[in-house]
Length: 460
Image 1 (spheres, one colour):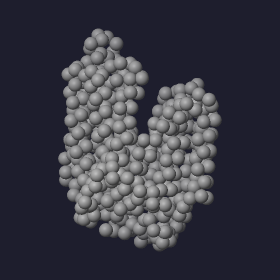
Image 2 (tube, one colour):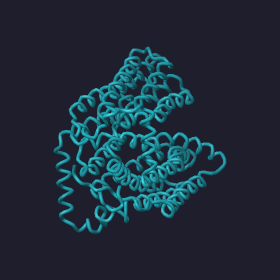
Image 3 (cartoon, helix red, strand yellow):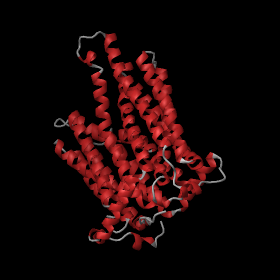
C-alpha cells in the first residue's frame, strides 16, 4: 500500500459522515454487489458450506465421546484435524496461486464430500471403528489446509476492487451467523433422533442406534452442503483481469512458498503487520479459548450456561462489528494501522477485568465489546491484504494470515494451560490484557504500523 495514498484515499470519518455523494457511492456499490450473479452464486454456496461445517464441529466430538467416553482420545481426533491443517496451509496457499483459488477450492469440496459421506455411511451402518475416525479426521484436516486459503483468496477473483470491503463484510458476517445457527441446528438434530436414548427406557443398543442416527445425519447434511456448494462454485466465473494475472511459469511448491515468504518479508508494512498479529495470537488466543471456560466453571456464580452466554455475546459483538464495518468502511482513527492499534489497546484494557467478574452480565458486556472491535477490524484487515498483495501471491498471503491464527492457537493454548498452574485466573487476564496494550504501544513507537493506510479502492 503506497504511503502517498494515505491522504487521498483515507480521509477522516467526519468528512465521510457529511458527504452525501459518498453515501450515494456506497449505496450504488452495495446494489451492484448484490446484482452480481457471480457474487450471489459464491456467497450462497459458501453460506451452505459454512453452515454444514458447524454440523461436523458438533457431531464429531459427540461421536468420539459416544464411542469412547475418553477426552484424551477426543483431543487426539481434534489434533489430527488441526495439526495437518497448520502444517500444510502454507503449501495450500502456494497451490492456490499456482492453480487458481476456484480449482483448488473445487477439488477440496469434492474431497470433503467423499470423506463426510463415507463417515456418515459408516456411522449409520454401525460399522465405524476408532481407527477409521482417525483416518477420516486426518483427511478432513488435510483438505481444510487447502480449502481455507482457496476460500479466502476467492473474493478478489470475483468482485471488483472497489467492492471488496462490502463483499468481505457480507461473507464474514454470514460465517459468523452460521456459528450461531449451525450448532443450534446440529444439536437439535442429534437430540431429535436421540429421543429414545433420552427417554431412559431404551436398551443400550437402542441408545447407540438412536445417537448414531442423529450423528450420521449431521455428517450427511455436511456432505450434502459440500455437494451443493461445489455446484454453485461451478457457476462462478473469475474476473478477466485476475485470469490475465495468472502465472505462466509454475514453480515447485516449496520454491513458491519461500518466494511468497520472501516477498512478504521485504514489504516492511506487511511484515510488521504479520509479526504483530503473530504476537497477538500467541498472547491472546490461548487465554480466550482456555481461560474463559475455566473461569466459568470455577466461579460459583457462573457455570456452563454462563459460559455459553459469554461466548455468545462475543459472537454477537463480532457479527455486529462486521455489519458496522460494511456500513462505515472508511471509519478510521487517523489511518488503518492507527485504528488497529487503538482498537487492540481498548481490547487489552477490556480483557484485564475479565478475571474479576462475578456475574454473567459483566462477562457478556466485556466480550460483546471485545467482539465488536475485533469484528470491525477483521473485515478491514482482510480487505487490506487482498488489495495490497499482488494477485499472483494472494493465496500465499491469505494462507500465512490464517496460519498465524490457526497454527499458533494450539501453541498459545498449551502455554496458557502450563502458565495457569502457577498463577491465578485474575493474574492471567491482567497479564494478557496488559501485554496486548504493551504490544500496541511498542508497535506504535517502534514500527511503521501507524503508517499503514487503506489501499485505493479503484475499480478494475
